[in-house]
Length: 186
Image: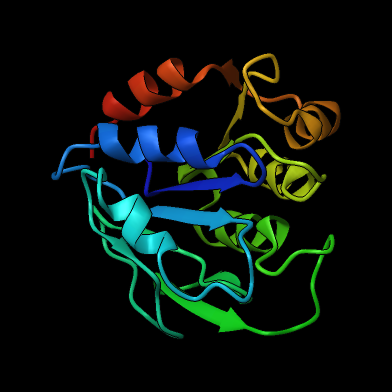
């Protein structure tokens, strides 16, 4: 039924995303697209830190890289990550959006246009509004919208902005997000 999961997060999301990735089995049936705000001048260590506990391989994709099930694709530092028809990733150094590069909104909007009702979008803890519009586009195009419970977030700005902009399908704590993902079948 679903073809991809896209997750956006910023301040306070690292531990949550680590727990989510740790919970995924090596035969997880979908690609996981990760757009996380991170320091633009730190080029190494982030993928390695996430990979230590991840159940699936984590890749910082190259431009035009093919998206495959059972892998997590992390937007590289200081690059926008677009999802293109034909299951490909495009990278760009265009101007920041919402003071961010990578922009969660850009990744979410392009993924929504490609996967439509077959996309699951998840917004985690974060300190700005980036991702709220993108999650709305996922919902508008028939996808499933999940927001981390703001009461659990270290920084509520991103999740609260998403809830104000979109009638989401679920507001889940981390354990519920994990259970939801573990129950996905191909």
